[in-house]
Length: 126
Image (cartoon, rainbow, N blue to C red; front, side, top):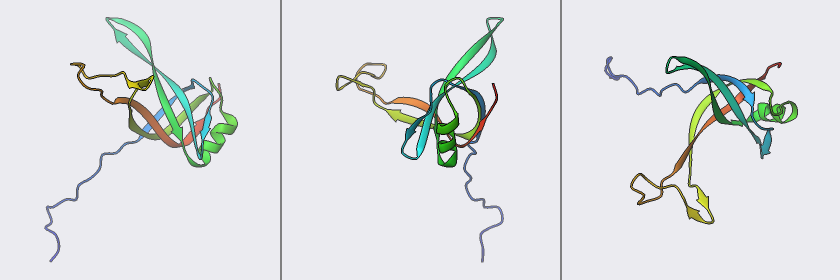
């Protein structure tokens, strides 16, 4: 006998991101991976007034797109990315001491950084 008809396999949430912005720094190579910063703008109403808000993201590029990014991209260039979001954790240290603590300042905690992972970078004119 097989599985009951009403039983479903667990599914994973989809983590797909399509985002456009401008490079905030030149592309750097890290082995087979390339990295750069991306500035993304959004207009929102703040206390009844429309204001532009800028988000800054770190981008990690893999595969052929990493090689092409190194070759053709530079600070200020607009791009469109298709990828996924990831959260990286790290301890912030200055002079060998962890400097970020929990609310009660009793123990060090991990810092978190949002990163875009991609192997699909489209170069835009501008």
